[in-house]
Image (cartoon, rainbow, N blue to C red; front, side, top):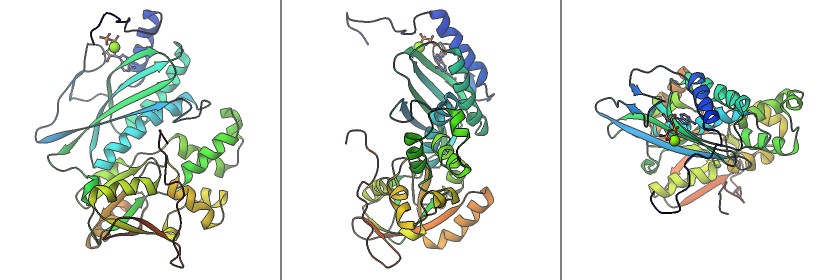
Length: 342
Ligand code: ADP
Ligand code: MG
């Protein structure tokens, strides 16, 4: 950017501190990949895209106090910043490869960065993702990760592919993260105090803080599914994006929404769970639509991977999302999901 009012690009005060932070990040997150010609350490990264592939890009920002509680552990923030991006790649059916990281920190806190890097690296290693570059600045705690992956040419799972008659499926279970957020807001402010919570509550918090991106499932269902989306802002809202993009409607059965044991303990009555499951964000499960004749193969693939996959409804002609209770009565979703500027 040009202009006279140009300010120094680096906001972290001591250049030495900035370089130390970047060095420690680079060391902690190292994942060797033969397709990285130049990772951290030059003006830009150089990477090789396999032939006959498309590059898939996703970027997501986490802001302290908005996307994670200010009390969140640095490890969890590092994990989640990568997880939400890998979840976006998974929802396209893509294979992740690299990531870049723009980190804005209130101060050059080496201990915090080391724990952050461990969380980021733990998940990065699980998926063979190499951190190839980034930027480090001073300001209110904000973490932006861009993840890069591959798809065979013209092979991505789009939101626009759902067709009338498709079965709607969801991975894992829904509502845990929303319950975890409630616990985080009322609950213990220190990780030590969280350690003394009942096991079921710890599970819910863990699901909020360390979402597991469903990368293998996205890859396995790519050839079978018509459409997919990851549930970041609430199922009702995210599924509605698919319906709009595809020009169709859907009917969900509320009693089929998969609930974990921990959520059942937290909210014993199904009707208490539905709002969390339909409108709660942060689960990072994948929602697919696919034709009924491929259902069996999809369920087999999920079983092989070891991830639950549950049919929860049908794509129908028309517009909009309806949710039915077991008696066939409409379940009203008062607040369908999270938006930033509501
Ligand atoms: P420049 O001023 O040319 O942007 P930087 O000092 O910002 O250079 O970055 C130097 C190297 O360190 C680059 O390779 C950059 O990608 C990497 N880098 C800086 N910050 C981060 C970060 N937070 N995470 C990963 N790599 C980083
Ligand atoms: Mg820079």
